[in-house]
Length: 319
Image (tube, rainbow, N blue to C red; front, side, top):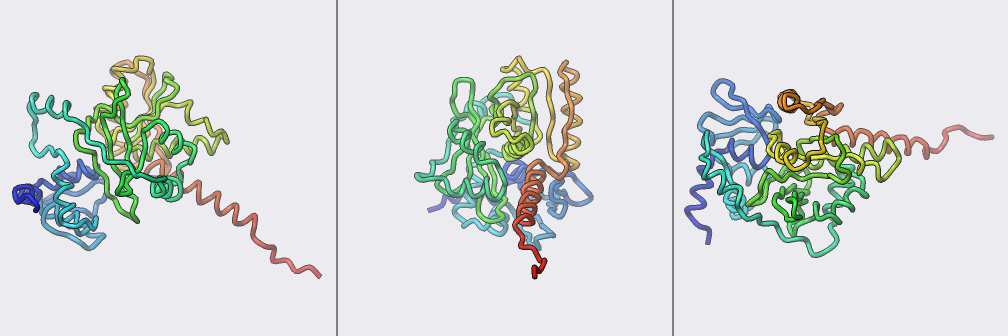
């Protein structure tokens, strides 16, 4: 039986806070509603509950409606999803509550007990990520597939203990994503192997992996990606970056590779200025498209077209 109190809490959850935590969306108030920066056709009314996604032609009241109508979740799973996310719905959090949040125990989803077919299908085929990168990250424990077929990205502390994990759905065009219960955002997913003076910063693990895959493709060297260090912020907050720099004193230069959209460009400029004031060299490297995965997929499609053209039978008639 579903706990009625949890259902009631889920129904009254601030949907803007949910979108920010669950999907990484950010909002700006315009008139009588809040508009999503990443998806301008998504609007939330001032009650923080009523929403409508114009491009999809669907709307509703509250988080449960969104999960069931947009992400096709069963009711019970939707309630569990909302209950498993720690949402900040007030404008300020006390120091005591903040400390309690940081000491939560991370609950990792159970690994799939077989070859991670969905993980490879999603990351390598659908997203174009270099399989050698995927294999290495799996070996490092930074990447795995859970029993529901989600991709799990894991961040570790200095003792090798998992402290952060985020999920990414793999079914169709599903936009499902969330942080696991007890995740500590200070320990972001990273691809740090060389500990060089330069650190590349991304919004998501997939963008970091895409940037690495592009480097492998351009250089023709399957190990090229390991000579650069990359960190995912899981959004645009610099919580993970600030903590990383406090632990890695070799870093002298930061390269901000956030999304090429209004929110990403604004965050890049703010962060570059902030850390330049701290004495670090900073620069901004925006992708050509919206993000580095879009750039990677453009390159993959171009290569596929070139290969198809090379194998196309000649139309000339020999007599």
